[in-house]
Length: 248
Length: 293
Ligand SMILES: Nc1ncnc2c1ncn2[C@@H]1O[C@H](COP(=O)(O)OP(=O)(O)OP(=O)(O)O)[C@@H](O)[C@H]1O
Ligand SMILES: [Mg+2]
Image (cartoon, each protein chain N blue to C red):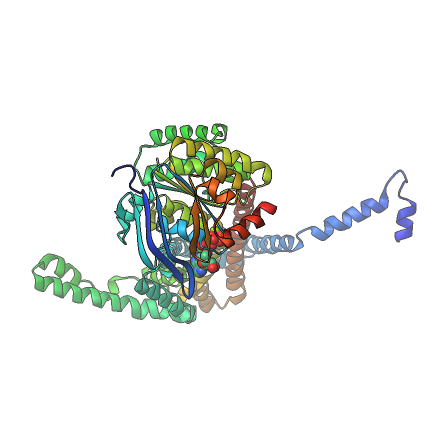
């Protein structure tokens, strides 16, 4: 695969939930190492788009390609592709019955078959990367929201992903904790991991994004580099949305 | 009373406060438990002082081992049946899901006594016949030894004790399936998603992420089921299995000492269930405390 070929490719993807159309004919290419930020009003299909990328949702029409491979229904193939795509959720979704360290080693051991000792070593490296190596043996319930989200990021990173998906990773956090998570994400962006981030943190978008995508009603309305996107949005709806969130 | 209480409040000995405290303590004291203990003590006294009670007790307690082993084995099997069935109930596979639901609904719709008769006297022989036919088929395929082993099975080779255990296990399997299902469904969707997003298969996610949490949540409910199972083993006396109920019936019928037989029997069950219930409550408290950490 040559480097300008997209690592994620959505081709005319549509997704219906019953009669609700969550995605309507969406096409999007993401090149390796790029950071794409997706914004848009609630219900516009941002989460659904992310979830189609790692097939947590199966598209109703169109095609999804990841690393040049077409994702079809084959479960084994799907699991192996998914293990190379990290996902970070709004509500962290850490495994509450496991310590931070065990949260990070579990999938390494049972998906990747990495020996316990090696998985632990890697887990500690990842915890250090997100700045909470001292919380290795603590259960999620004893961590602050910001710390939990950083453990969740470490958990995803431990699988050595080429792609990281973030679905509103800071929306459930108290303001004082947002920064610590965004910092970790900024560092990842600099390291050159491909990232697709749904967020309303415009500061992050300006600082880290290569491309900002605005979605509304299941469609991609506008797509541009952050400079252009924020300074001279071409679409009326984008302008409206931006003025709404920048007011806050 | 109120006024008086306020006026002596600063007296050297604080009688009203003491009275209030006493009232509160007496109010929260588990009198019922004391009464239960008194009943047990009374029965014990009867057994140790009256020969007729002593006779009855000695006779009946011979059935304890049957009651206890039946409970333990049937419960163990029912847990396995329940776990498998609950996974079927929530499965995306149409056939598995419907089979599991059918099983649960059948069991829930039939009185337990009828189920015990049916499973022990109709179900088990039917399965035996099926095995024999399977034996014939295997023989016709050429595996004569394996086939003959199956054909030579006899219906009455399965003792009533075993049939009783099967009947209880199959019945309670449906109950614990519902408990497990509730437990699994109480775990947020995000857990399965997180596990799947890391590349775990559905089975791996169940085994390592969902079930450990779900089972922990339903431990108290499973404990209560165990207590119910202990009581419901009394039903197997209808199969002439010699548990404590059956033996007490035999004793009463033979000696006409109904009072002695049934007081002993009732207190025996009561002691076991009360102790077990306390164990379950203790477990529940422990889990809640762990949860807070
Ligand atoms: N599992 C589902 N079943 C039914 N409808 C769904 C499901 N998931 C999403 N939808 C619908 O699809 C549409 C898009 O949802 P999606 O979650 O992708 O929006 P979103 O842009 O992420 O919104 P938010 O900012 O609120 O997270 C919404 O109308 C939503 O109600
Ligand atoms: Mg969303």
